[in-house]
Length: 406
Image 1 (spheres, one colour):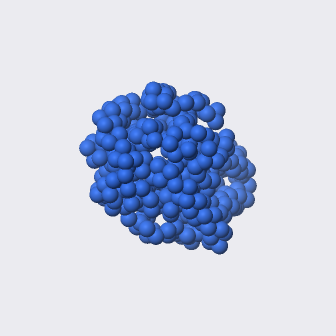
Image 2 (tube, rainbow, N blue to C red):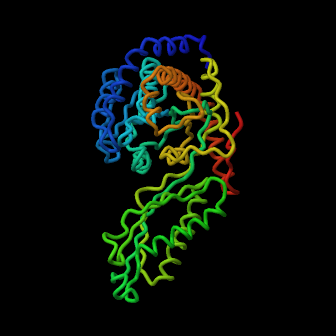
């Protein structure tokens, strides 16, 4: 789609007219950060904006009180989903810039609203809570929210302008050891040191980490390790975050971590309990057709989005679970220099600053143009699905970091 077309001119004009209101909403979210699954004000504000603009809004989708889906159009294909995130981080607030994600998606939706009916397609605006802790998108995938969707679109603020996101698969484990209490000097031979067993597990994992493949790592913390120093602990508990380049690699890592804990338990005669905490975040699969379309529209706005730096990973997200279901994009737009990071006070400030505003408005326009391309040209969705199926097939032969060249 060209910006010079009447539809393109209308989209750009709508974004320009909406700019002040979108920034006001973004700052409102920023001033009132809400944690995962508690984003009541944010969800009400965003859903209300959609309703007042003519979208039919369903609240509490997928059994989540702060999830919603706005809908406009025929109900038929092509079907495009714009994804809104709006949860914040404890103590740091919007240090991941979800206020910008929400308003960029909202802006794209509002700009497209007058144009959707003429395309014959359907536009969905999906409110996705709890990206930081819990994975609201996973529940939405399982509830069928993305059934029939041809393109799932969102952006993320960051410290690079990247056309796609190197996001790994992730799962959290709880590993607990049950031992036997004893006095460390009176009868130590009768004790089974649960804390010592947990520490053995950390040592085993340190050895394992030296041979892990690119993109894999394990990070652990001790939750409980005893109460006083004059009793050998009969219980100890750790929590471990596992990440890997692909979901299949994560499954292998999970088996290795389990084996380390079980080996430590055998060595000390402790009992071990291993539990998965929450849902698994699958690896992210960027769709090259949609990512290329977004990048071209972004370039028209003067922003060049490059490929990620080799060997650099930006964590994990429940957008991965969407991306292995339907063609998806998750590009990054810079609001801080590359020597900075998100999840910091500086990023929180940037998410309410001028660079944040500029990135949000650029993303809103590029998302709107990309969505309109899918809605107005059936060939775009067909090409995106062909690329999606090709990627799925290629993943069977091994992990690939360089998912596509732009």
